[in-house]
Length: 134
Image 1 (cartoon, rainbow, N blue to C red):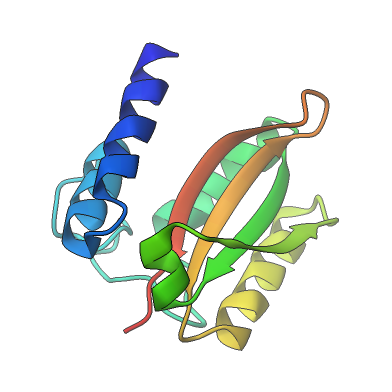
Image 2: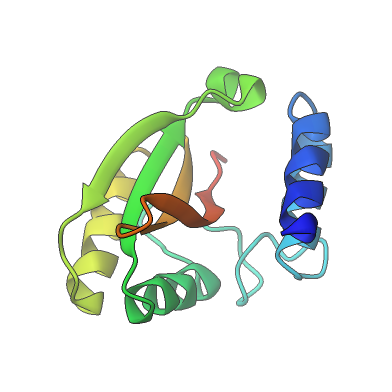
């Protein structure tokens, strides 16, 4: 719990500096800096869900969590003002991944954040930026 609070505070301190935020997100998720957020070494872009994000979706589904998305244009991203996207009703991995791919393709110039939500506790259990505009 303490680690999570410290990580959130560090993220808040970086909110107006995209380079700092990217470094924070990279280190907060245990990835070496510079790999762009996916385990295949490529920056996740529209129409391509990174391997790491796909693994996170599978993990959230295994835990019984709902998967949801949020998005922000570059101005809103800098202000930390995310807009709610869909909470995916599907529970089958292939269908959830397809719906995420469709959302990424429909929002190519926005930041997209993946959420894992424990519907029993009504709490976010996971969040990760899975798309950054080019």
